Length: 127
View 1: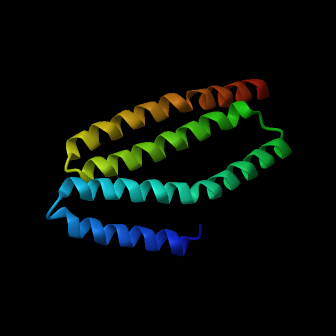
View 2: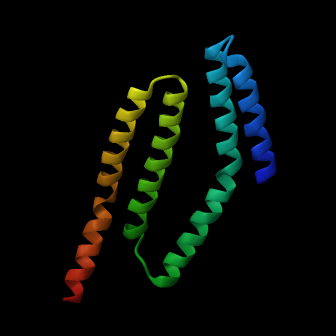
């Protein structure tokens, strides 16, 4: 799906949600979640292409999958945290969104630890 279709979907859903928010706030939130799911589904092929290119470059450079796995996990945690936080804020739960962002940061740091270990192993091997 191209960016114009995704943008049209997002703007249409936003306008519909804005109209519904005054009358049926719960339905507006459900509409937003449904549109968000469709937008993510439309971008999956682009993400798969990026992943394929990164894997090919990694093989060419001789990098271990041990290097890339923490990067992908950290990016995934960041995306899920960002989207979930936005939904919480949209539902009027700013405090919950802040707690979620803090938890996401902690989990991203945890997921990145193997990458830090690999860097130190590489540096130790060079010395």
